[in-house]
Length: 276
Length: 139
Ligand SMILES: [Zn+2]
Image (spheres, rainbow over the protein chains, first blue to last red):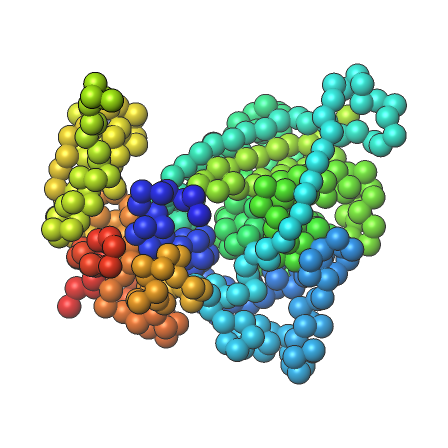
């Protein structure tokens, strides 16, 4: 891993601690959320992501969490979730099924001038804005839920596109850590601060909820092919905007989509897409 | 290459100190802030006018988690799974490092989380090939 060659990995850095466990603890303490409620919220978020994966023929995991639990002999999927044998704490209090699924893959996209895009075979979308910002370890200060470099990338992209959080119809945040992905959605203003877990439990993050996120299944169910993922996240947003996402189609196709991704070391990138 | 002068290395200087239980940062002459671990220029304002300082090693542990996956580097296989924490040094910088004095089990980590922030003290872990900074719970 290329994370801070001088001091990161040589001194014991590990992604699951930094990206999951410590962020989870910061989130719980900041918002007064119990470890039990955190666990339940993470279960519901995983359930949503795997539901989306089950509706996506290209997802690496197409089995719902409920089907997985039943296949392992559990009648209650939450009992399966809390089973240390099936779903251990990888970086307490974060469990294995809140994490990324590695995949091979490739993605590509075509960009052209707006006047050339009209009249093409596919409905074009407009690339309205972008922002990019970099950081070094430990990525956040005293508050593990606030990532300043993401804030800067978000502000740059939203400023260029002249949008605000209330304009977003579909959001993807980098979610190879489910809790980090929720924190980013809260930083963006798509979800209220400290409200991400409740939104997951209420089904609001589903494709048919009022705050749809990661409808391809996200890093956990769709899978993560590193450099190719930002392209597949964008592809999903474009499918949704065209109304061509099949069984997981957002009922009212989004007009404004925001795609946030992390690249290693750490880079935050935000892209805003809109109707042309 | 006789005409190439060796530049001072902040990284080598840090590890030489760590090997002797001395914890080093650089202080910025332009903005006054500390950069830890040390680099050649200030991480806050970009100034190259930095000078070495010694840290107390005293810190507050804010959060501690663990990791059950294979060690991130073979040098840690002898101590894995270990506890990894988010800390604030007495001098200000936020740091993440290995934590000693608490077991890498969910029950122990939960008890520690419920205590809230606790004082810790830096010490050097002497691994086979490299000194590593760690922080031990006081008491
Ligand atoms: Zn400075």
